Image 1 (cartoon, rainbow, N blue to C red):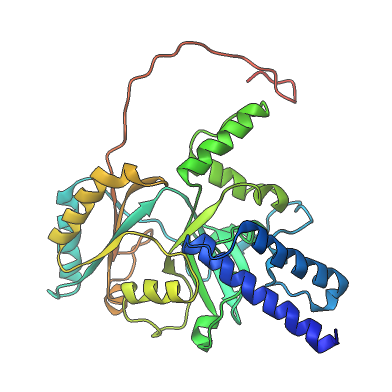
Image 2: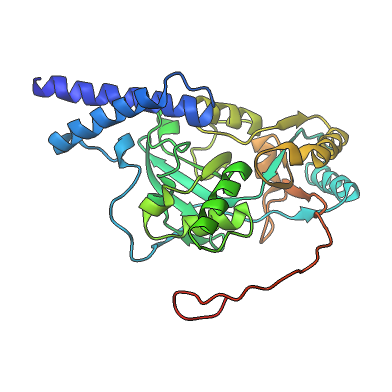
Amino acid sequence: MKTEEIKARIERLRQEIRYHDHKYYIEAAPEISDYEYDQLFHELEELERKYPEFVTPDSPTQRVSGVPLEEFPSVRHRIPMLSLDNSYSMDELIEFDTRVKRFLKGERPQYMAELKIDGVSASLAYEDGILVLGATRGDGEIGDDITSNLKTIHSIPLRLDVEDPALKKIEVRGEVYIPINAFERLNKERILQNELPFANPRNAAAGSLHLLDPKIVAKRPLDIFIHSLGHHQKGIFKTHDETLQRLKEIGFKIIPHYRLCESIEEVIEFCKDWEERHRELDYEVDGMVIKVNSLIQQERLGFTARSPRWAIAYKFKAEQATTKLKQIIIQVGRTGALT
């Protein structure tokens, strides 16, 4: 093949693989078999091996870096990743609504109520449509650059196929998690290998993201739900629900099961419904997040020193049970310590 034909074939393979990644990892609606997918991927790998001058950072073959890191560099968030105020009762949600209306001088806000995934917060920054930085929340101001680890998550697009320049330079934020079924399989594998099981999916996700070898991270069943914007060009969206829909259209796996509510009473009804139903899900949820839908109203409401005034978390009641300790097994670890 001529050089231009080779380059065109490589780009065509990348487009096909990105399409099938989206169908499999985001829509859960695969159109080809694993074998057919592997054939496409192996052809791309072989062409890039023969013609390394055509390898680009956004190629599907570049998800897993071959070089372990010595440490994670620190990065400062352009917009702080603040925590949310928590509420534990419906009365506290009503008080939140009262505060919002007082700040808005009586305007009636719409609210977005969405599931609060019990995962690990992360931000993804894109320049010219290419993923250039993935970071942990850290202390809200400064996090760790874990780009190489986040790139191993197939539901994170390495490249955004968008024409709008405002969407080519964008930061999104979400929660990295491990599905419950996948977590149970992971722990079974660890026990078979005489390794300690993880306490819960969140700990497993957090521990995985802080491993220095992306090849090991790539073997962990990590996934992500995107729930909001970070740094972006002002004015491109007017509401939070519009933001989520547009992010979904350009390839992100957005937070599931949300509702646009016209009143705090609708919010409370939605929260009660999911407090009863959330154990049906294959991922851990520890509450709901309630946000003012209008981005203009969000800007007017602003922030306190530690949290936005336009959002609040409603925490589900903690699950409690009585257990009986039957046995303690002491093992000698690799370093000689007793565990």
